[in-house]
Image (cartoon, rainbow, N blue to C red; front, side, top):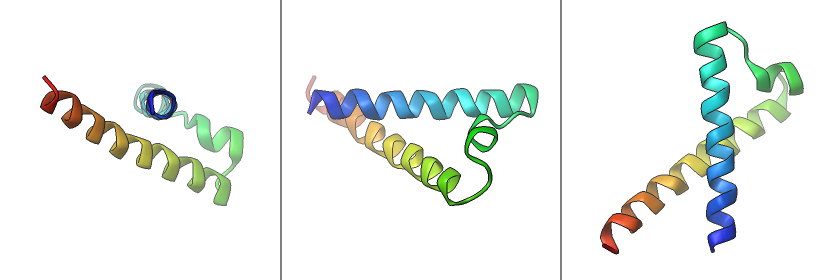
Length: 65
């Protein structure tokens, strides 16, 4: 399970960096690499799902203390 958690964390960090680039430089790295088609939407969906998984991990970590 620790491997899945690390993968989710990596995707969440990638999403956060992309949002930082959008906010600071008005540059969307995902769309510049994958275009504005279905592949970019899949990447956004994966990042969103991994963010939700990380929320669950956060609360799981709090409960285990």
